[in-house]
Image (cartoon, rainbow, N blue to C red; front, side, top):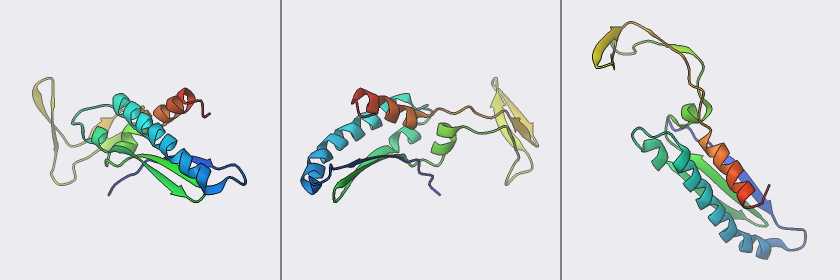
Length: 136
């Protein structure tokens, strides 16, 4: 299962200008999408690089409207972006959990996870790049 995070920025052509104005906006939206993606990739937490590699953008022209979607498709993207509440972790397939703490192997039937505040790397990148492009 893939969790998608999307931030939408729509641009509509002024009345009467139609598709030609939208066509002129497409390269601008592509540049904005690249800037947002680059900023988000710099701000994301990196352990394996998987989350960073799934950050992308898509520009979709639809008549007089141009849509920019910015997304991260890694399974854990939502948890990194939005954070988690405190919760209990229990084993799924084995009798106990096994992990290392300070170089020592620890076994436990359950662990109380303190939660994670989150790192809104996508929404902050969108906000900052829109401000930099003076589109807010």
